[in-house]
Length: 454
Image (cartoon, rainbow, N blue to C red; front, side):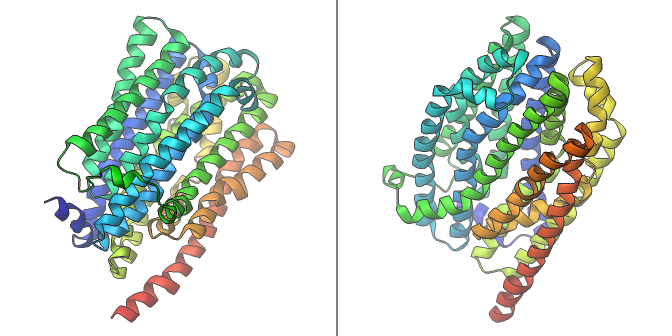
């Protein structure tokens, strides 16, 4: 039965598989995103709008450290999917063990550095003026729980790679629901302010970690029953995980740099109000795109498994189906956000300045949403099949090659509007680039291999 779960990735109809993989992933991302969304609403209404800005300053730092776990998880999962497709279970086990050891070492190293230089880091990421003190309180406590978050992310991606999307969904839901409960108790009932919000986040990360431990060591559904020998690092495995995982890490590093520029640029232009507006829009970026990201997550193991099994016709079909589903969902998200930005903003805060400024920003940021499916699926495909260099370049295209230069140039001519205009322009340009390289790869790799095999 355990082997059949993985084997289904190579035999079931692609549409059925994509729905089975994507729906749990979407639900998990939805719950996790709702957690961030509701958490921000709680903080904004129970503590104040400055608290929203403070959390926005801290997020890129904690997310980057947690992204070490995510990158190792996704990089290793690509190897695991292809290894299971090729019936090489020992390689899958060794990869998983190396993921755990590597994550523990790197995350504890970066957390130590993050705590040692916390004042300088907070200031660098825009924690200025009234934002600094609440940001420092939140930052210090949240970093204690980041190792649990990193290990949970490794586990979540491995669970999905072996073909158990429902359990991967639960791995995201457990900490999300836990955080909301902790928020209500610590912020609302016990009036612990920013410290309460931070301890709620840390406690929820611990819950997620405990769930992953239960899945791999006490649950009989997994095919990856590792032992101590699998934890021993192997240079070849580390290099393979690193080359693929670096794609995710680089993407998150660029996101963190983007937050650094955005918070500082917006603070200089509009002060705390503009930073708060960006924080609200950022939460909607995490939340509103959950169905598109769910399809992307569901697509990864399907493409990886079938590529490893040399079923290239199924790989091509999975690409086309994933883009079609994701584009339809992205269009629905676009319509909702264009119609209701004011109502969405008022959920977070009643601050009149923030309510006045945020809706216009939201419309600009999501203006090109209907076309982003191609960019997301295209970049994910190269990562799924183990081609690290094109995956890295396409992943960095939007944020690194287009968005950051645009936010440094356009505000000089258009002020704050130039910041918001940078979002759709970078989306359009990166989608064009990704579409070109994806089409070229399909013709030169998949079609040729399929012709040879037949």
